Amino acid sequence: MSEDRAQGSQPRPRVVRWFKVFAAFQLLLSLFAVAFSLWRLISHRSDPDFDWILPTLVLAMGLVYGFLYGAALRERRTRWHWVLSLICIIIGMFNGFIAPLVLVLLIFWVRDNTRDYYFV
Image 1 (tube, rainbow, N blue to C red):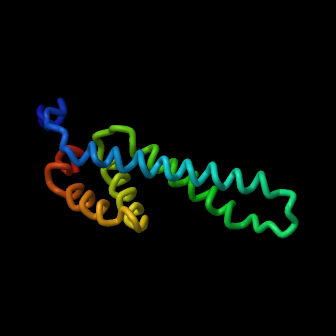
Image 2 (image 1 turned 120 degrees about the vertical axis):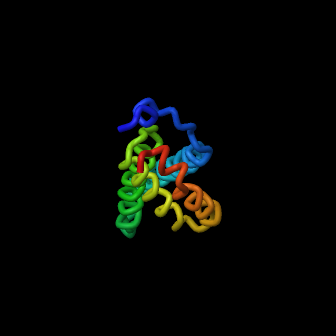
């Protein structure tokens, strides 16, 4: 490994900061889904016709996505972190109301300067 890469002298691309904003927003959405599904499961226990399957699925997906986006928020300049962040961006494309913004984030994420920053 060269001296420059070992010391990390490459400047941090601006897209990394925007990814952190995106990941924090997605993490907040995931935590909201977890909180809402827990509230729904706890408050509607007494109702005999309560359908518990959907809140349980939302709880599980919120926990998984929360873990993914929480892990992606940690700044690590490794290949696996770039791939994890790319997976998070692709998952975020399914969130309809921010899909155009995520598409722009994806375009800048796969550029050479970002890949070089993460040693890919």
